[in-house]
Every structure is written in structure tokens, then in C-alpha cells.
Amino acid sequence: MTLRQRFADLPRAYAPDEHRPLYGYAAALGAFGALAGSLAGAAKVTRCPVPERPATSDVVLISIATHKLSRLLAKDAVTSPLRAPFTRYAEPGGSAEVNEEVRTDRGAVRHAVGELVSCPFCLGMWVATGLTGGLVLAPRLTRLAAVALTATAVSDFLQMAYSMAKEAAEGGRRRSLPDAGADRPGHAAASA
Image 1 (cartoon, one colour):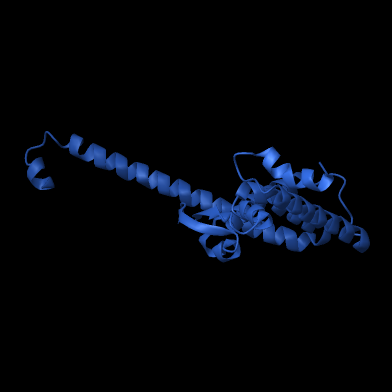
Image 2 (cartoon, one colour):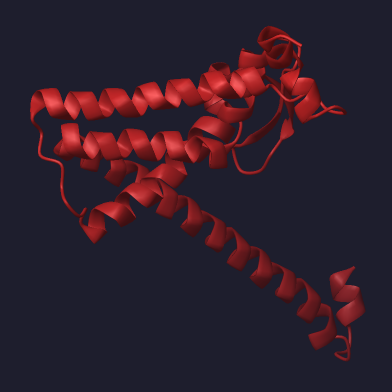
């Protein structure tokens, strides 16, 4: 068997019962390497100082901003046009989010990109790398953008907490009101 045949048979040998876009994943790995290398090269050319140890506040800020930007890119309804060449709408997925299916009919690279752009966990590494590179190359602008993303993430969690608290209070009130006044005269007529 030639090297070319082995290379061609690799995806089938790797996952005989399921289509896995190994060559698309390899392309994505190459693109990520190019991104990281470009950021490192830009830091070297511009002679931007690379911190020996990032500040804890920057790590926290970039972590929360990465979470928000990854979810925004992978799940937000408004960013679905960016994902549309690689995914297909499936159903609503929660507060202003959508669930999408990866298009498998467009080749290995598009399949791999579809998996990447529809998965906030997968995008996290890319986003964190970009934001971290931004801290080196343009720290003030990156921190400003990260603050906006972090504030939005905190707002999202507060909105969810408020909704849950409101639902719990209304659900508890609905359950307790009939029970609390059930033995009062005229209660049944008043509630009818």
C-alpha cells in the first residue's frame, strides 16, 4: 500500500462507522497555528512587551470575555449569518440563542468549520488566543472590549437569576394562594 493510499484510507480507518472530517480538522489546526504564529510574530516585530506573568485581573477579565464572545459567535441568533455557510438552523436554543446542525454535505473543511463555529467550547480556545494576543498588541483596546463583553456576560447571568427568582416567587404564590385561603368562606366563589 502506498503512502497516498494510507493517507486516503485514514478517515475510514479512524472512524469506520461514522464520518469524521479528519482533513478538515487538520486544516483547522493549521489555521490555529497560523493565528498563534501571526500573533507571536506581530508581538516580536512591534516589540510589544510580553508580560512574564499576566495579572490575575486580566486572566479573570479575559476568561469571562472569552465565555461571552464564544457563546455570542456560536449560539446567538444575530450571528447566525456568519455560521450559515457551515450550519443549518435546527431549533430555538434558549434566550436569544439557536441550535444548529453542522452541514456534512460540503466537504471535510466546511464540516470541521461548522463544528467549530457552532460550539462555544470549541471556539473558546480561538477567542482566548485572540484576546490574549490583543492584550500584548493593543492592551487598552482589548481590555475595553473585554470589559464590554464581561459586563454583558454578568448582565446575562443577572437576567437569568432574576427570571428564575421571579418564576419561583410566582410559582410559589400560585401554589400557596389556594391553600392559604381554602378554608375561608367565599374563597371558591372569589376565585371562580
